[in-house]
Amino acid sequence: MLRAVIRNARILDGRAFIGMGLLGLAFSLGTIPDVTRVLMFLVSLVLYVAYAFAINNCFDADTDSINPRKRKKNPVASGELGFGAGLASSLAMALLGLMLAATLGTGELVMYLSMTLLATVYSAPPRIKARPVIDVLSHGAFFGALPFLYGAYLDGSITMEEWSIAAAVFLYSLALELRNHLEDYESDLKAGLRTTPIVIGRGLSETLVLVFSAGAVGLVLAGAQPSLGLLGIAVYGLRTNYRLIDAAMVTTLLLRASGVM
Image 1: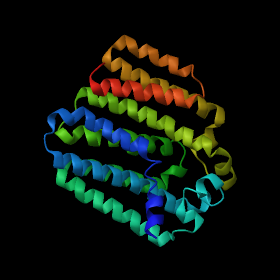
Image 2: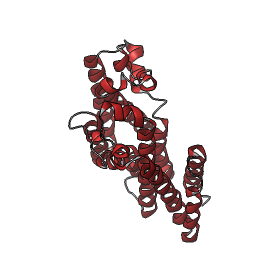
Image 3: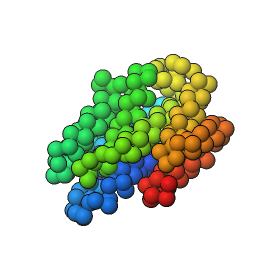
């Protein structure tokens, strides 16, 4: 069963969201001499992302069971892991993560608790992932801005630069959520789900992916030099080449974090 529990956490699928927390950490590393605090942060971050994916698998088991691509990634849907065991192991991850966050300070605990609660109600009842617009906005917060701010706050403060990066990460997380929904468009339609793309249509959703992505890259560039923000428009021209869009976002973020820009 341990193997199924580990698979249910889907750590590899969550690497981009772990990266958002690590990005925040990169902005605060210069003023954090305590290696233990960094280690506590890293473990709690991985546990948080693991929890978010695991709890989602538990409550998506019914719809994932009719989607061959998603059933392979969901041990609960495939029957390899029971719902009760999946739920219990998910909650254990969340509780351990909260305990570690509590050792970092009150601010870190509040932030960790906030994103954990959002990740919970996204998947579990009232399942805001099934509510158009709110599904995308909540994803932008708990799998975008908040993990970044959790890392950025490890030095005890959040600068204006870090707030601007958080806004960019929020926008990009909106785009990632729309992309995820678009991949499942047909299966979600058959399952009767009302995700944002189902309600507003595939075409408008694809356009919004480009708008949010361009806005995110432009915001990161503008933080270094306002005029550079206009280069974000170039992302719009990449259309559905999501690999190039991801590469542009990651590159600009790394340049900002390293101080090159």
